[in-house]
Image 1: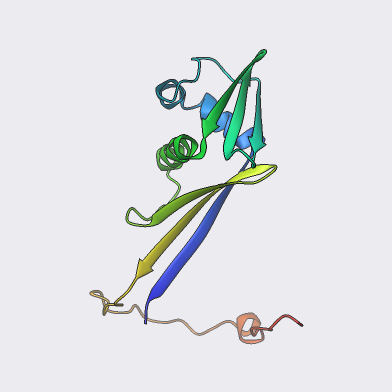
Image 2: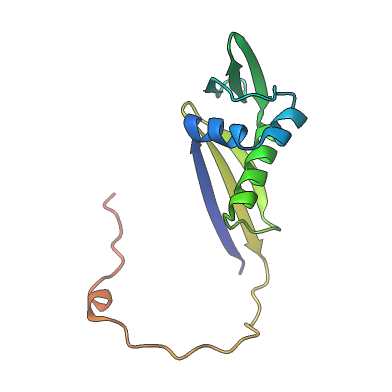
Length: 133
Protein backbone atom coordinates (compact mmCIF):
# COMPACT_ATOMS: atom_id res chain seq x y z
CA UNK A 1 0.00 0.00 0.00
CA UNK A 2 1.70 3.21 -1.13
CA UNK A 3 1.73 6.55 0.64
CA UNK A 4 1.21 9.49 -1.72
CA UNK A 5 1.93 13.10 -0.80
CA UNK A 6 0.45 15.60 -3.26
CA UNK A 7 0.78 19.33 -2.97
CA UNK A 8 0.33 22.32 -5.18
CA UNK A 9 1.97 25.70 -5.07
CA UNK A 10 -0.07 28.36 -6.85
CA UNK A 11 1.39 31.51 -8.34
CA UNK A 12 -0.95 34.20 -9.62
CA UNK A 13 0.37 36.32 -12.50
CA UNK A 14 1.79 38.95 -10.13
CA UNK A 15 3.66 36.26 -8.17
CA UNK A 16 5.08 34.83 -11.43
CA UNK A 17 6.21 38.34 -12.39
CA UNK A 18 7.97 38.76 -9.04
CA UNK A 19 9.61 35.32 -9.27
CA UNK A 20 10.98 36.29 -12.70
CA UNK A 21 12.06 39.71 -11.39
CA UNK A 22 13.86 38.14 -8.42
CA UNK A 23 15.49 35.45 -10.60
CA UNK A 24 17.34 37.51 -13.24
CA UNK A 25 19.99 34.86 -13.98
CA UNK A 26 17.39 32.15 -14.57
CA UNK A 27 15.29 34.57 -16.64
CA UNK A 28 18.28 35.35 -18.87
CA UNK A 29 19.06 31.63 -19.18
CA UNK A 30 15.57 31.15 -20.65
CA UNK A 31 15.94 34.00 -23.13
CA UNK A 32 14.25 36.82 -21.22
CA UNK A 33 15.79 40.31 -21.00
CA UNK A 34 17.72 41.36 -17.91
CA UNK A 35 14.93 43.75 -16.93
CA UNK A 36 11.86 43.74 -14.74
CA UNK A 37 8.88 42.49 -16.78
CA UNK A 38 5.98 44.90 -17.24
CA UNK A 39 3.29 42.25 -17.40
CA UNK A 40 2.76 38.50 -17.14
CA UNK A 41 -0.25 36.72 -18.70
CA UNK A 42 -1.12 33.04 -18.69
CA UNK A 43 -1.86 31.47 -22.07
CA UNK A 44 -3.40 28.13 -21.18
CA UNK A 45 -4.17 27.19 -24.80
CA UNK A 46 -0.51 27.51 -25.81
CA UNK A 47 0.88 26.13 -22.56
CA UNK A 48 2.96 29.27 -22.09
CA UNK A 49 3.21 32.34 -19.95
CA UNK A 50 3.53 35.58 -21.90
CA UNK A 51 6.07 37.94 -20.36
CA UNK A 52 5.85 41.51 -21.64
CA UNK A 53 8.68 44.03 -21.68
CA UNK A 54 7.22 47.19 -23.22
CA UNK A 55 5.77 46.18 -26.59
CA UNK A 56 7.88 43.02 -26.81
CA UNK A 57 6.22 39.80 -25.62
CA UNK A 58 8.13 36.60 -24.88
CA UNK A 59 6.46 33.22 -24.56
CA UNK A 60 7.93 31.22 -21.70
CA UNK A 61 7.16 27.50 -22.07
CA UNK A 62 5.87 25.57 -19.08
CA UNK A 63 9.07 23.51 -18.76
CA UNK A 64 11.25 26.62 -18.49
CA UNK A 65 8.81 28.36 -16.17
CA UNK A 66 8.63 25.25 -13.97
CA UNK A 67 12.42 25.18 -13.61
CA UNK A 68 12.49 28.88 -12.75
CA UNK A 69 9.68 28.55 -10.18
CA UNK A 70 11.25 25.46 -8.55
CA UNK A 71 14.56 27.30 -8.21
CA UNK A 72 12.73 30.32 -6.79
CA UNK A 73 10.88 28.15 -4.23
CA UNK A 74 14.13 26.45 -3.26
CA UNK A 75 15.85 29.80 -2.73
CA UNK A 76 13.00 31.05 -0.53
CA UNK A 77 13.16 27.92 1.66
CA UNK A 78 9.78 26.58 0.58
CA UNK A 79 9.77 22.84 1.36
CA UNK A 80 9.75 20.58 -1.70
CA UNK A 81 10.58 16.89 -1.63
CA UNK A 82 13.70 16.38 -3.71
CA UNK A 83 12.52 13.09 -5.20
CA UNK A 84 8.95 14.17 -5.93
CA UNK A 85 7.47 14.18 -9.39
CA UNK A 86 7.03 17.76 -10.53
CA UNK A 87 4.65 19.17 -13.09
CA UNK A 88 3.42 22.59 -14.08
CA UNK A 89 -0.12 23.54 -14.98
CA UNK A 90 -0.98 26.85 -16.60
CA UNK A 91 -4.47 28.05 -15.83
CA UNK A 92 -6.18 31.21 -17.11
CA UNK A 93 -5.10 33.36 -14.15
CA UNK A 94 -2.39 31.37 -12.37
CA UNK A 95 0.40 28.84 -12.67
CA UNK A 96 0.33 25.74 -10.48
CA UNK A 97 3.47 23.82 -9.57
CA UNK A 98 2.29 20.31 -8.60
CA UNK A 99 4.50 17.99 -6.55
CA UNK A 100 3.82 14.29 -6.00
CA UNK A 101 5.91 12.09 -3.74
CA UNK A 102 5.06 8.39 -3.82
CA UNK A 103 6.40 5.97 -1.24
CA UNK A 104 5.60 2.49 -2.56
CA UNK A 105 6.84 0.61 0.50
CA UNK A 106 6.28 2.43 3.79
CA UNK A 107 9.14 1.86 6.21
CA UNK A 108 9.30 1.66 9.96
CA UNK A 109 10.48 4.94 11.54
CA UNK A 110 14.08 4.95 12.71
CA UNK A 111 13.33 7.35 15.57
CA UNK A 112 11.06 6.38 18.48
CA UNK A 113 7.89 8.35 19.14
CA UNK A 114 8.01 11.29 21.52
CA UNK A 115 5.75 11.45 24.54
CA UNK A 116 2.20 12.21 23.42
CA UNK A 117 0.41 14.99 25.29
CA UNK A 118 -3.30 14.68 26.08
CA UNK A 119 -5.52 15.85 23.25
CA UNK A 120 -7.15 19.23 24.05
CA UNK A 121 -10.90 19.05 24.50
CA UNK A 122 -11.50 21.40 21.55
CA UNK A 123 -9.72 18.94 19.27
CA UNK A 124 -11.60 15.97 20.71
CA UNK A 125 -14.91 17.58 19.73
CA UNK A 126 -14.00 17.70 16.05
CA UNK A 127 -14.52 14.89 13.60
CA UNK A 128 -14.29 14.35 9.86
CA UNK A 129 -17.52 15.20 8.08
CA UNK A 130 -18.11 13.87 4.58
CA UNK A 131 -19.45 16.50 2.18
CA UNK A 132 -23.05 16.05 1.06
CA UNK A 133 -23.35 14.62 -2.44
